[in-house]
Image 1 (tube, one colour):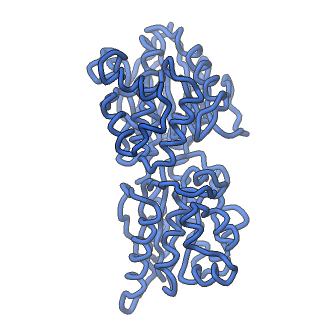
Image 2 (image 1 turned 90 degrees about the horizontal axis):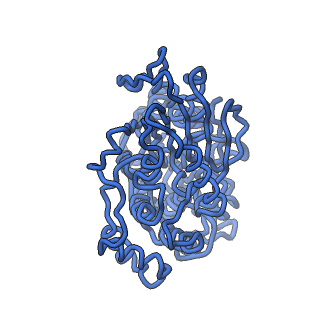
Image 3 (image 1 turned 180 degrees about the vertical axis):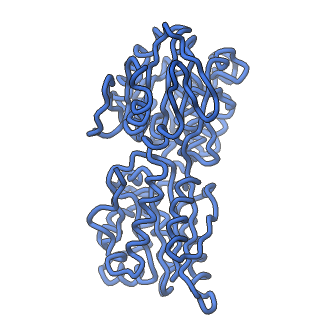
Length: 453
């Protein structure tokens, strides 16, 4: 089922001359990386052989084929796998965030907590361990991984408690740390991450199909690298703590565990030389680049001049907004424009939280652009989280143009104050320029579009 931009739709699009093309292009982007389609494209079953991206894996006639899916796109990814593998599949387990209406035969569904792990995340991790720990060398585990699995599955290393892990996670999420940095620390505080899932499944063959939600598609970082060797160390984790000046704020037990690990007292995460990885294969099946290209292809079909700027976008969200407002200004001044233009970027910005408002990084990018875009004509800036949720808000993103600043002031809104308080959701809700989507069934970072016409 195609993703939809649902009501209430942004006011800035209601009477826009390119409204249908813009909405169609956004849905094309999301559909291109839908979890079910990505898995179905990647895997085939022929007799007792699995075919994945040109590789062949014989299935032991006496062995079991077991399917596990974890992350925000887990239910859809499992649906795609079952379409291809149900005749051979013995059982499946889905661990995800939201209730799903997808029918999944032979499959149990468990719900974890996100973005901060909770008791449901602990329960999900224990359930997963029981699900895979009895597998033998004859068996094959298909692991379907998408972003969000790090929080949805939580199994703290002793003596770390859930409360201490929650406190650490909240501090990291508010600090401006990148997802790679957050996951480096998670891998050194938890049992399933940094190759831990593969270790529990060993000696079974583990094959992971992965949707990327991290910059550069580093499999060791996606969902904290549950089936991948970990190149990071306890020393790296401590460096991140010190870099963000968190050493006096994180629980003493967390700091103590990291220090013991650096001293060699606690065992490191699993590295590439570990023989267990001889039985593990990881495949990337969807990324931000695919989403960007699908959107641009639709714009181009409809007469737009297009440019894919990058899928490696990073930085403080409000500052990224200012940069893209500058791009919009430049495009608005192009001489004798003959056709509309769409530039697109993908990636994941960060927000250093200093206030107590409600919002997320995509809304922060949009609000960061508002002042610098004021008065610019015939330009739009659109932000969109491909998972359909931006931070703690229910929106996926927002739309800004040259009128947003003055419209906000007329409504009695203070853009600078909203930005300082990280209170971006109420700001765009009052303006009526939020983007909402139906369930996207994917998670490949964020999209940022600049459109000039």
